[in-house]
Structure formats: structure tokens, C-alpha cells
Length: 272
Ligand SMILES: [Zn+2]
Ligand SMILES: [Zn+2]
Image 1 (cartoon, rainbow, N blue to C red):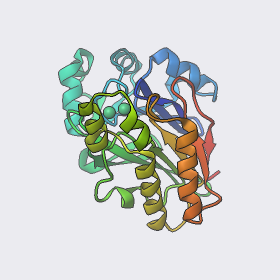
Image 2: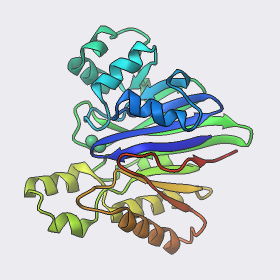
Image 3: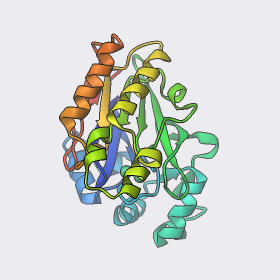
């Protein structure tokens, strides 16, 4: 199984997971052209996409034209009921597909999307309809492969650590450096929003990953750092903070992988 973050920031998010020639997209915050172009570099096309899973209804995670293009190709869109309701309220093409197999609710927190088992866990974030972290599992020759994606959360809610345990790859946000946020020129209300119901800081992200490792039977192969703030963080700071946390935890072999705003990161392959 493979995972690649095609881009991640407050300007756009899209992650692809794939196994053989079936792919799953988590969020579609870029143009269909951008997504298609970067899928091609790993030998995939939009026709290989078994489904799109939406985390929440912020514009950096759902691009309306991309939603329409992918639905026109017959690619089903998955999200919990409340998120699908907001999707239908906001976008005409989604409204027209209400009640059809093109929009599929993740009922009781679980959906099977092609070969992928998707499990949702609600996270605290100020998005209408809520926000969700997803564990994605697939059967491979070497057993069940699991990757978890958790971005856009003000704090780590009860139950999320257990949801993420025993993942081979963790894609977690490491949004801001607490000091850079504090000294930034951002208005007070925005600083408060980010800290309480917006995003995890580097320190929070490090603690979160350590807690996941403590709850796991094995260490992940990689921790991928997503949604890094342009103004209040740097990739170097986010990576250094996570590496320090992993080393203090004795997890020296876990790779820390950075992501980029407008370019894909390296492909992380696991359970091959
Ligand atoms: Zn976001
Ligand atoms: Zn958001």
C-alpha cells in the first residue's frame, strides 16, 4: 500500500492512498487538473479512484469544481451524514445527487470504498457538519495495512489516540509553532481560534504521536507532517519537533516525512 500527500496547507489538501491500481482520495482541495497531473506521476488516473472521502467542509478540503468533475466521472463521494448535508446545501451538483449512489454516507463511522476499509473518528474543528479523522485499511500480501489521516483539529479528543493506534503510517497535522503563532501579526481572535478549535501545534502533534505509539503494538514506519502553516511554522521546525519527540520516546527508526503546499511529497510505501 502507498500513501502520498499531493499537497497540504490552508490553501489546499489532498491525499491519495493506493494499492495495485485502486486509489482512494482523502479531500479534494485542489483542481481536478492538479490532482490528475500528480496521480499520473505514480501511474494512476482519476479512473482508478474508487472513491473520495471528505474530512470536512472547509474550502481547502473541498474544491467545488473538482467535486463536480469527479462526480461527473462517476466517482462516489463519501462522508458522514452531517457533512454530506452541508455538501448538498452548498453545491448544486451534490444536491442533484442526493439519495443516489454518487453520494455515500459513512454510516456508523464505517464505509468500504473499493478495497479500502474506512473508519471515521470525529475531531474538534469549527466546520459545519463536523470534521473527521480517518483510518484507512487494506489487505496486502503481508497482512492488513493501516494508515491514519488526522488534520484540522483544535485538540486531541477522547478516542482518537486509540483510533490511530497500530497504524503503519500516520499523517498528522503539525500546523503551527506556538511561539511563532503568539508573536505573529494575526488578530487575537484568529490566534484564539487556531489554538482552541483550529489546529494542533508542533508540540501538541508530538505529544499526540507519542500517545499513539504508547497505545500501539508496533511503531509506524513513518509520520507524515501535514497542514504546516506558512506564516506560523516552517517544515524544518515541524520536522525537528517531531523527531525530538520520537527520539525521546525511543522510536528512532520512525521516519518523519514533510509535505508541501503546492507539490506532492515523497511516496510512502508500507506492508509491501
Ligand atoms: Zn484545513
Ligand atoms: Zn479546516
